[in-house]
Image (cartoon, rainbow, N blue to C red; front, side, top):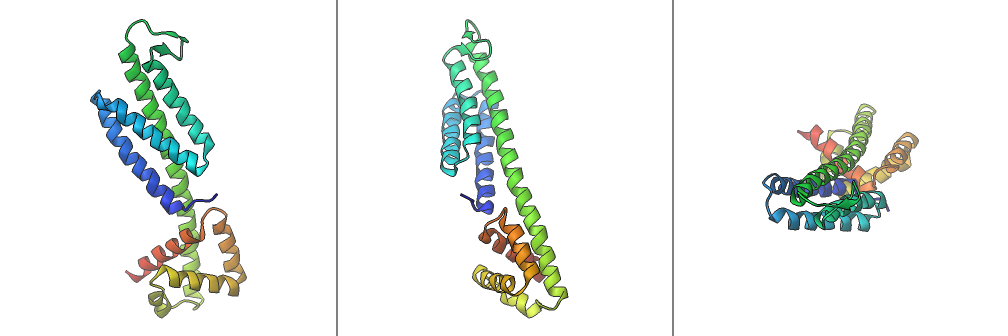
Length: 193
């Protein structure tokens, strides 16, 4: 199932905001870290299970299980019981886990941002072409002030022009129609200011 890209970026930004709080707790070696880290990873797992991203879900489970194993007194690297320094090893594995989760979130968010940036470039070039060919003028730009009006106009121009229909197909390979309308609105807002 394809998901609204703008929404994914917001979710990842929210996860990163929560992640920063957890990083602070880890840096302070707060006893609250353990509980908050567990809650955070459960929220992540729930999101990726719901979205069907089993690869990321597996990675997070692997990270969580390594921290849990150390917490229970077993070194998953050496495959032996921890005799001394269990708490220090726990903090070390927790640090490693948070770094891994950060990398996963940043990679996912950057991937989605690239899709939006590529889509925005195509939409802005299309709008410039429409203006240059006198298909869109200042009055039309001012008229397209809601997503609903943009949707109607977009569907009209893709039916009338084969090259625009081709651009639409290219955009739809990575974006939902709603993402395209938002990008169209964003570019029109830039023109109006």
